[in-house]
Structure formats: structure tokens, C-alpha cells
Length: 570
Image (cartoon, rainbow, N blue to C red; front, side):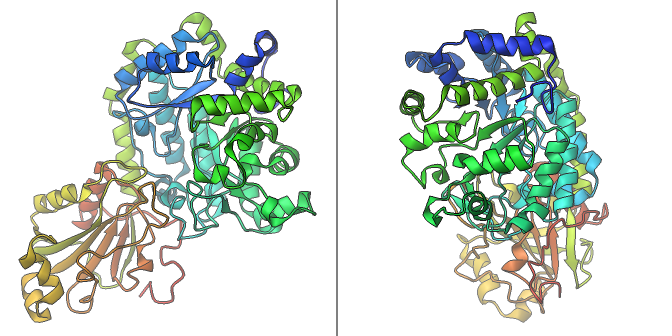
């Protein structure tokens, strides 16, 4: 490990701090430094610190979610003031700082950014995310996602990916990472060895990247090598198997013994650090996921993740139990002293690269409260609007329906599908805003309501001729994403199939999706279809503007929205 080389580039002073800090740590402190915890919004910093001190654990950092910039800043300050070694303060910020900071910017899912065709907007997204994180004292983002969305059935990659073309993914991931780095935020690519081939979710099981070595090299390998060559500092290793390379490096291995990336020595040591030349820090994906312990007991998996190449263990199932498992792994020699020191060295080296140690000494790990003014300047809002404007995609309009005009298409029958709180958006209810904005444009909107028998039965049971006289357009509004326990993101037609599009040749019919871009799979002959990629207010508002003809559609789909169906483009 060369700390002067890519991606650390440490100077003599920084290396001295790393080595002196490492060598002065007790064995217990080193083991504690392997852990990064999820800091729940229901618990104060003092309460979480007290819980960890009861078992003698001093972590390397915390991940924070879902509070105002003022409250997040105060919590980070409490954490940093307590520990001698400066902490990583991380966020899981796929689409901007909003997932950590409620008044932060949601710039749009990566697929929406990819649909703009402009890598500079990706750079600006990374930069504004970094500025907002810096204002509260956060220093690490678990992003960008460099997964390739090859499989439309994959419920978790989906709009989190920049698209299905490796070159496109690399171009945009590189740009957004540069923006983060230029703003002082450490980027972390994920999910090694690559999600998007399987149609299953590693949250529930260890999924599989089934590509051959040659196919992987030309796709995921190309993306990871490109990011490594550009100096990516950290990488998240996931609960995903890559059998082709496991068999190559271990020809005698049995299928049942192939391990996911988070536990796989060959994928870390031979492929990632060897063939691809990655010298940076490796963190596991959340070890609370089902895929982490599918192959072995948790007590064995906890230390093996570090022994086989990860440097940081993300989250726990039970803090005390996992800490004891890690300690037992050290005592039993599963984690050798050399491997432990190697992990600690990389952790401290990344902290040194971010100058966390000098900021700790200077009292500047958390900036003054005046830094929160960045949230009031509107820079992030303007960027989110531009991304929505340039990313929303008119996939097809074979009936030349758009734009809608309230003088010609006054009466709209709107059917909402999904729109419930989901895994990446806990709010839901965007149809209300969508209908409100349509009414502001002068449209008369009737909403399908399963509780109102008269309205619900209109589309299911009325004569086609009668429905045509009353309504000018049928408009499906879809907001479907996995809610954290689903293994698919597909349309469920409300009303016991009564809302299935059965009048597309009689009444002009269109569908919009503000999340999953693949609904033509379930409604291939819908003649007018729009993908907006992100469930946010600013996206819904911009979508209605485009439907009403106030601005042009500019987005270009970075995936095959027709899902390879022979008739979906008709």
C-alpha cells in the first residue's frame, strides 16, 4: 500500500499522522474503527455515543439521514467533539443532499441526469451536493452508483443508474464524482462487483452478476477501471456474486461456496486490487441486508468481510453482538494483525486526504452556523429545475396528442397507480400536485376513486360512446418504486382490472411515470408515454408544463424504455 500514490496522494505530514495514530491505538480501538453506524433520527448523538461506550466501541464514523440542516449540523458537531479521531460523516445521497438534509437539494435520480445528455449537469449535481454537505460538516457520500441498468426487471437499480450503456455510465459517474471531490466531499462508487444484470435485490438475498469474464470486462470492468484510473477514493462492495471471476481465480470452487463481493477474497484481492489496481478504501454495503448472511452464519460473516478485503463494516444487526463477533475473529486469527492494520491504515489515510485531522486540530470540522446560508440561496433549486427540464423524456406520442390544450382537451380522466411511500421516497402523494397543476392550466380533471362507485364504474362499465362524450383524454399517472420489501416494481391495475387501458383506440390515452421507466412492459400499446424518472415536486411541476406545451421535451432515454418488445413503439 503506497499512501503517496493514487488515490490518497498523502504528504509526509499526513503519512506521519496516519502511522502515529494507528500505532498509538489499542487493539480494541482498532476493532472499533472498523465500524460505521447508521445514526437514527430517533436517537440523539449523546444517546448513541453512550450506547457505544457501554461496550467500549469507538467507530470510524456515522451515516445520517432525514433532518433539517440545523439539526444535522448540531448532531455532527456533537459526534465530532466527542471523539479524538475525526469521524467520517456519511450520506447515502443518490440524488443530492436531500436524503440527509431535508432542506437540501434533490437534483433528480441519476437516470434523469443521464437523460439530459449533459455530463456538466452531473458535475454541478456533485458540486452542489458537496457544498450543502460541507455546510453541515458531512464529508463522505456513498455514491455515485455505477451500476449498469441492463435488466428492466431489476427493482433496485432502475432509476438509480445513469443508464444501460457502460460508456454513458462512466462519463456521467466520472463527472458527478469530480463535482463531489471539487466541493470537498469524498465519493464512493457502488455496488461492486456490479448490479443490474440480475432481476433480484441484494437487500433480500445475494444476487448474481452472471456475465462472463469477457462481458464483465467490457462493461462493469470498464466502468470501474475508468473510475479507478481517475482516482476514485472509495468503493462499496455489495452482496452480489460474480461466478465467472470466482471460478477463474479458484477453478476448483463449488457453486455453493461462491461468495458475494462483500465476503469474497478473490474479487477484492485478485480482481479489484490486482487486475484493476484499486488502492483506495473498501466499505461493505449495509450488513443488515439479507444478502450478507445468505451464505454463512452472521458470526462468521462479520470478521470474514474484513479478513477478505473490506476495510469498513457498514451498520450492524446488533451492535454488541457484531462487535463481539469482530473481536472474536481477531482473537481467532481470522483477521490477522497485518490485515487489521492494513484496514486501519486505509481508513486513516482517507481521513488524512480529506484533512479531517487538521480540521479537528483547528476546530473546523463543522463550519460556523453562517454556512447554512447555502440552503437559502436557491442555487440547488435552479439546478434541479434545469435537470428536470432537460431530462424529462417523451418516449413516444404516436397519436400526436401533445401538447394538451384545455380548449380542445378540456376533460381529463386521471388514474393514479402506486404513489405510495417507497424505498427512496418516503412521501408519496404526488398525484395530488399533478392534478392541482393540471387544473391551474385550465383542465377539468376527474380522478379515478375506487371508493366512489359512480366515478370508478365509469371507466370499467360505461358504454364506450358515453365515456367518449364525457372525457377527452384518459391519463395514467404512475409513481411506482419498491417500498423496501417488494421484489418487483410493476403496475398493479386498480379496480380489479377495471382500469386496464381498454379504450386506447376510442379515447386518446397517455401515461406518465415519475419513477420506474419501464411501464411499457405492462402497457405496451399506450400511444403516448412520458418518463420523468424522479418523484419530486419540481419534477411534477415541470412535467405538467411540458404536457401543456409551455416547454419542449428534451430528454433522451438512457435505457430501452420499450423493453425490447416488438410492438411497444407502435
